[in-house]
Length: 219
Image (cartoon, rainbow, N blue to C red; front, top):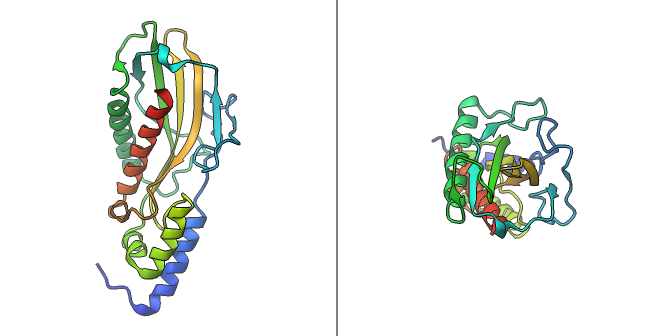
């Protein structure tokens, strides 16, 4: 790793600030099956779930679940930026594993849509990888640490750190009726220094948080 000179620190911090403020927000992706149902979500103050659809449903009537294979969104309105196909595949695979594992703590997984079964379809629509060198540096540097502390207090993204954007669509499996859907952006706490090491680590931490959030919703 090359040593970053003192003279470059202001530039690095400026870039960090711009990166933290200019990250793309989720949109209603035209290619989603639930696109016509999604509406702005005024109840979401965090900005993590800007679009949502929900019906009047009692989740307690469901005790089994089918988790579809995670889709990687191919529409022109995707938000993958410079993420490679290898990165997309790795994140989709990790998402499949983590969401299935989390949901198994609440539901029994099945392959046939019997009564009382939910079907969850996840679509990875965007991702941002952590910037090499500058990602960890912006968390360890004094100025960067102050910036990230402010971001953490605001529940916003850290500088130069990865994130994921995805859609969740939940159906009554036997009838294929849409029960709930949302588009969300997840990212690690801005003070999570460990998540800044490795191009995909922050995105994986974000996926873990998203799986936990879905589990809470379905309890």
